[in-house]
Length: 234
Image (cartoon, rainbow, N blue to C red; front, side, top):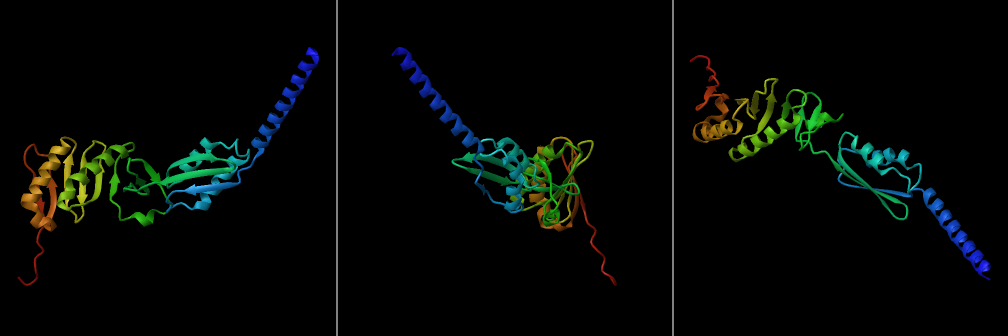
């Protein structure tokens, strides 16, 4: 009787194991039946997102390589971040965040809010953005400089059209309207505060006539005004 009991236990365990194995194999072969994409997509077609993830789904719902899908999506020009997760029983949920272009970078690139460079074939749509230029590897620090300048100039109602740093880390800016700011490479905040003060006190009333403001002096500034056109006959 003891032998028979053990035999029945082993047979039952085998049946349970076989059923579990079959269930596991069935789940492994379960295909992804639905892909849901969320997020505000202005520059990326939803169909392109769905087509890109298809090769990674060949192994089925459980074998889908979520990390590979995320990396593929983030390689698209306008995708800043992507998250991918499974939703039972057979759905894949994808949420994407597009890049937010803050400025143009060089001839054909853009900078996002973190100073990361990305490219897009639709660059013509964003020509009104300010232009930032600098040596390779300077995008992040130049974006930080740009954001500090924007914050300091905002109370004046003054906007930046172009910001450039050269190989010697000398910074120059062109404001909307054409005024050129020469900031140099040191004491950025102190020099910008000096510009803000002199602009409020002296230059705001004549902002359209200011051609250049050189802030590289230890205490003062040098201001150059545009020449007034001569009227013929006078």
